[in-house]
Image 1 (tube, rainbow, N blue to C red):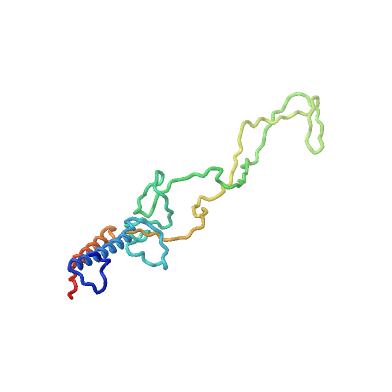
Image 2 (cartoon, helix red, strand yellow):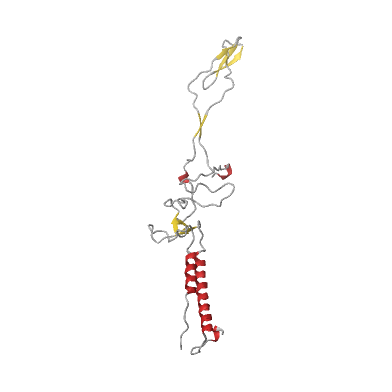
Length: 226
């Protein structure tokens, strides 16, 4: 007998009744399996962002905060997430410190700026000169000093060569090596939580539900007596 043809007031046989009971139990099993499948959409180790209503609110059942309070989850406090790759491998996620690689800025990445440069002071000093032989005439020059001409009574003096030398330059430092001064894009802080499942290491309890469903299927329902 087809279940769809059973109507109120019909008298059905025991076999038809058992068929109806089996169909209802199968439907119940399918519903339980579907509900369990929805729970199992989260697997152990899955990490998502969470915005609790209250700062002190506990993580939902089956989840733990990624803030260092639980050893099963990495501490992601004040950290950005990036994909694991050749330059960024999964670190010691049980530690509170994650090593980062260095990165150097090129000159083109720096903003346009100027540096103040000061030549170092050499201090007071003198240059000695060699006196030349011969006869020179002296001519007074307006503004001070004497211009010497050959044939007069003044000796011409020539400054000695100072030789090859350099002057030190002091450059003022620009900028600070302070990571707190690095610019951040606009952001919104959220909590990270990781799914750890039930006590049986991430199993959401579907096995227990399936056993319950199978137990219910074994229950026999006696047909109604006329």
